[in-house]
Length: 627
Image: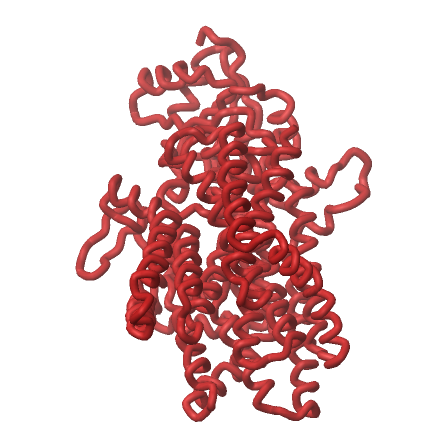
């Protein structure tokens, strides 16, 4: 039944989001409708999860009912606003868009279109990895997955008692979207697919910007695909790291913000994308603050040019602000209420004010943030051009492959320097701003944090391609871009890591999951994972202390057990009292600690199950209840 609820609810959400975009953007392009569809879909699902979570009512029946009511209402509104005939015509046009693209590629013989192959494969293989394997990426098992699991366990979106600082206070839109994919089926197989729609959003936004720069349909789609095929994008799609989601939302917001005339629908979509971005990553709040003067000036100019419709324009702007605050503000508001620091847990100085927190900003960003360390800018450039990269889902070195440093970056520099002399300078001068804002983040030397930069460069490439005019120059340039994009993806594909474990096992009775756990030594051993699935019953408690690093492993795959934090604080009787109150089935403690000694002193009450790898945690089974 669970998978039926998820499939029906997700299809209804997609239908409602598309119908709403078709009704509200009837004069827009197909790309704009698809971008709006993804924004509306993410916002409506997040509204259901976040709204119920803030009320402490996040359960499977209520989530399904909330989705049914909200998406049903949006679908009914769209049908009433546009009419069935109009929606049918738009649907036929949108369904035919891929065939129009293929026809244009064939007619133009666009060589850059080879990039569509690795981009498509990246989406497919990411879905296969997410379905076939449990969460295994380092940060994801450490704190991204626990965010989702805690929301399902508690039925609420709020702080939890834990020793892992990042679980509390970080923006969590991606993890809350994962709640939809986990809670409805009551299965974690799809907990890592939340970023796949955002990869499409980023590709559509890049393609739309390229169309605005004068690129053909074939070239624009090819350049959008190149963004997906970048190592820093492709290798992260099967995780909830949230950088692809944040990057795509930033690029999308920039597209709608830079629309000529800035229509009311573009204003709403700009603020909607910025709200989702702020709710996804803390850099979203930073970029929102940096872009707010541009947003305000553009709004005032737009209202000034519409003297007969200012109240209507203000109404649309107010709607956008409401969406921005609802989707982006809850985390920061709770952080301020609990700690006085909206950027919890980083301790830093902002605008002369000292923000308190348990860790220094350098512990998150590495060296001093915002190029504060000597040579930081050169370090960023070196990471773009290093000969070899360490390819994992959080790829840092050579994050953009060969394509960006050797082709796109020169194109971006040329177009930025020559934009003032171009007839399209009103648009092209936005590109250096997009590129510059993309690297004004705490750790710009990590390519996955700056995904707006290659997007700006891809649009610059489209402008340069058009400036060449003759196909004798354009064709070799397209071929070079396709070669570098495909070669970069092929070189980085070792970063999938788990692909060699897929398929028929070479050794009998050794499963894909077993080989995965042998390779990723921060995960529980295979025997321990099997024991967790077979031994823990619904409602069983697994208690843990501050020795735990990879908390995502402490839940079963259907999240039937509970995970609770109990740390030893130099008070043995109090520690034991808190443990007894939970009646745990398993207890995880620091090996060699006073807490472990207390458990072992209860002779015959606790049995060692296994020792966690990488961390100091040791897991014990509770053998009797009278300890």
